[in-house]
Image (cartoon, rainbow, N blue to C red):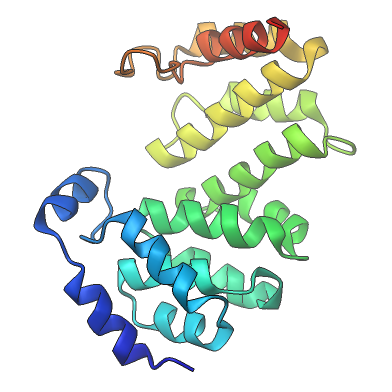
Length: 221
């Protein structure tokens, strides 16, 4: 197995001040180009113990690499819970949920626990998993109840939790026609992310615009 120290030295050599400046604007404290990071992961392939060692360093680039070389199904429920609570950099949090937790057999148990967690960053992970279920496996979800919670709590939620709840709101509106009008109405009344700066040719994260645009694309042959 490749030694953690050897990989850390390689990551240090890839440090780019310009990349760090860009990443730090998004709250990610690392300076490694993600394309180069993925190339390192491709070369290393899956190495679960290396992944655990890299994660333990606490370094953001190392943790991103750890996620890429890990075996998602090999983590225990308690390991993933602890990892998410440690994952304060947005990119680490996002990759951990999307690349690891979603593929782990404990995903549903963690979704339920995290969504109800008082820590808004942890709760945002639960909402991200809920959004995935809304899109891929909605059976058993109470969509009306989810909309009730969004309607009551999203407006005043901290940024990352608000973003995750808004994504869930949009996903319900996009994928479930019976709930679309209510989802759009909630978005219009709460006005969350209505003024979010959106680059040209990108879809606004404001739920009414997002829902209508994605539905339009689905309807276009």
